[in-house]
Image (tube, rainbow, N blue to C red; front, side):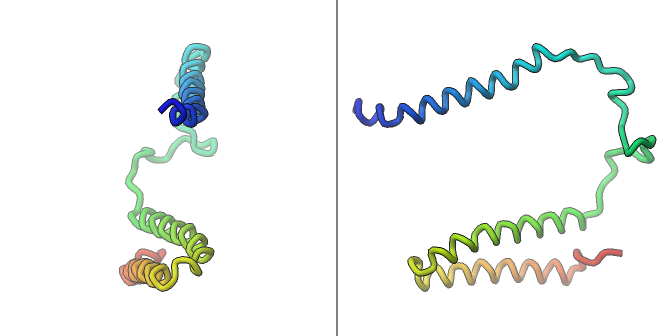
Length: 121
């Protein structure tokens, strides 16, 4: 049992150092930094102009759809590279699993396209 625990000593030390460092990085600025907010610091800044509207106006849902579409295809690329490298080892099961994955993504993309989420006015 002692040998097994000894093998995890570097991991435990790493976690201990990470926790201590994270705590120091969060607490020291709270202690050292001076906080004197004034009206100029608390005001909104919009390219040197006074803000036109409230900053909390709702965005058009298309922005969210395009961002979700970007994340989906970004993840697709992240899954495609390891799949392509290990395709010889995974065989037909790996091939058809990726084809199903790509089909689901393609159906989602076509659905978004048909709904007009990618059309800008």
